Length: 404
Ligand SMILES: Nc1nc2c(c(=O)[nH]1)N[C@H]1C(S)=C(S)[C@@H](COP(=O)(O)O)O[C@H]1N2
Ligand SMILES: [Mo]
Image (tube, rainbow, N blue to C red; front, side):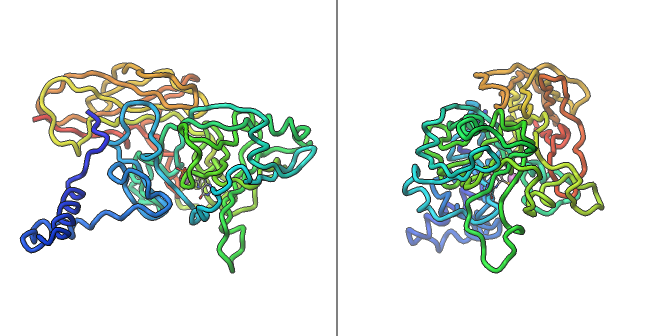
């Protein structure tokens, strides 16, 4: 049902053409070669993510890698090798991982502000949390308006297990939050390009201070030291919040009265209504809302045989967790309760669901619709916005399969 290494045909063609030409047999591969070239050879993985499973990923650019819909598997946690990557700036030099424990984060907006090393952080507490890490632009590819930005469909998301120190422990060790603070602001440790106003490129995001209760400073992902691609040696994890708020290579954690002045906060990642200009008075992409999608069967797996099919996928509810998921095999006219399966890793993780259905010959539109624990139901339609953010539409995420 969910071959984790399904190779699209163009990969096979490109790979076999390359293998043949390497063996000096290119002359008779003319047809395959031409086809492979016409389909544009897949882009190679960028160096900092060279350890990833190329077959499981769509390489949009050197800073945007998307998990293939058919590669999610059905074991809850997304393997690190298959997890999407999104960098707004080039990843820092890998040398920052040479001495992880020496990494320094400056904590401000507390009674006793100071710098702490990762070694010190490791003495202040330890917590493990599973969260859905999702880019707020996930689903942008379904917007008919073609917003600028990566046209992700479903694969700019994964369910990841993090370990680190709770931010509230760090705050307690530094005497508590200074008075009047309303936001937690994280600053990324990338080297900034020269000759530009730092505020136009700096990756710095603020979230409401209440998010501190669940936030951790993480140094481990899925049981391994945090990789450079995913923000090692240290990353801020804000469970239930959109990806951009989870600051990689964090070098400063500040409790602040106001939101960051960085462009990525003031004008980027705002829910800007169609036709309007981005501005700080529009909602920022913070908490995620209830969402689900089907990961199998998928049209790219070819026509199905008539009979039983396990319709399966994932569902999450931001900070609230999932109460249930319904599946439709008639494009949303009728719905049936799906079964939640697998371990429940907590309210910030996704749940897997399955509905066994019997499909006869013909075309079927399969959709899923999740409900969170507060009773919010996944909407049929996306909320239109200029940036193509927060697409949770069940209609957009439906898949059409044929049975023959
Ligand atoms: N320092 C820093 N943190 C960052 C980013 C970045 O470019 N720099 N990108 C953000 C965005 S937009 C997303 S979606 C997630 C992507 O996390 P991942 O690459 O580990 O999947 O990291 C967020 N944190
Ligand atoms: Mo993102």
